Length: 623
Image (cartoon, rainbow, N blue to C red):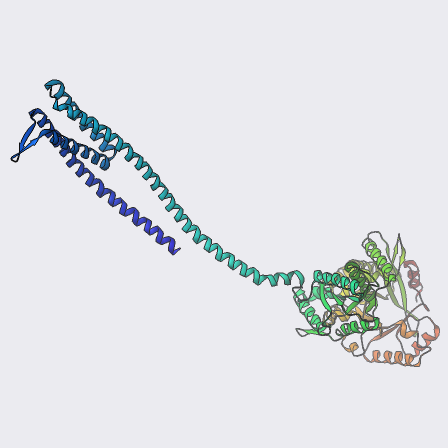
């Protein structure tokens, strides 16, 4: 840019100096022209004077001079002056030459024709010669001027081009610097772009694309070297509910803590990645036995046994694991991941063993679940969901205590589907929200009608899943249903399971407390089969515990089982909790439970799940 400015200043100075020079030169040319015209005329007059004297010689300053040489000298002076005219003034000088030359020629001709002066003939030839010489010189000068103008024009174009080049050079340098800066930025960002393309931005783990690439590479190595490897697909159970409950920012922090625990356990030769959301994959690149793989994955499962504390809140998160093996199960990355995913879903349905290896039977089960998932979307619209009511009785008196409402699904294409099958699917795809509302509304309407018809009161027990309880609109939905159906909340009991408190105990407790404030009682279902301990009973806002059928089955044959059930009933009463024994099918079981002071019983001994009409008859016949 500095060089360009200097060039522009130089051009300006040149232009200014040339303008002054032209003005001065023009003034000088006018002065010289006047002198030369005067000299030309003086010489012409002198020559005419010589001609008129008609003498061969003249005296000048005491010298005798011949007229012929003097005449020739005067003609030379005239020719020189004419040439100088042309050189100085170009076209103007050429015209002046012709004018004064024409005048001179005319006067000379007059001298020849009128005065018959032979000496004057020399002037005519001299003047003609001057005309010829001036024409030749003028044409040459004009040719040179044209050439000069061309050169000047080329010079101006060159100067203009030089100026443009100077500007272009500066622009190119600037663009070059910009390109260098861009290249530097691209080099700096190349690693970031690679990170975005192949790594998860939140956890820094390999993403789905890299996991698939690694599996493809391992397949090629496995085929070449006859090597085995395994793919583990694992998923956090109900992690979406944590995100919905406390927000994605807190959910991300919890996820990072989980990944931190797992990374400490991953072998350096294996590849660990995040497939998306709460799904992860592990490529076990070593040839391990079935038991070695199982023990390895167990360490990952057990890493989540302890709760995660964040912002003075404790969160419990569990994971389900599925495993596929190369080449036994599949020989492509697509199917190795798919089959590991299928095995993972099988482990989700198992409350105890959260690790499962893929087998062909799982493929059939997976296809069946996919079919159910599609059908259940339209189950309510097609009126395929119905209710049955299983009665509950007071243990000592045999008096009707209430009913547990149980959902049944009878599909037109497959037939009757067990709740153990379709409830987990409904929880997974979110249908449990609308289905749960329908069950609550229908059961409240039916039981309210029974109470009004028979003028009797009893407890209606409805199951609530963790997905429902942790839904933001659940409490409002319950209020709306109770208001619209007119059902008395003091006779409504909601059953929850122990696993509900694993996803987020604080949130679950808060929701249950709100229900209790509305007069609704809370029962802990399937107690003893999950993760709850007796210490939990002091902190959970529950009113009733339901002892699982697996404990009741053993009270007749196992002494420890009888002692455990009896102690459990006693401790519950100490905590002001009521106890319901599930799955009572034999009279001796009833007698033991009565002796142990159990409050209520439920089972096939006194009543199976009944349809609406049959259950209504029991209400009518109850004293």
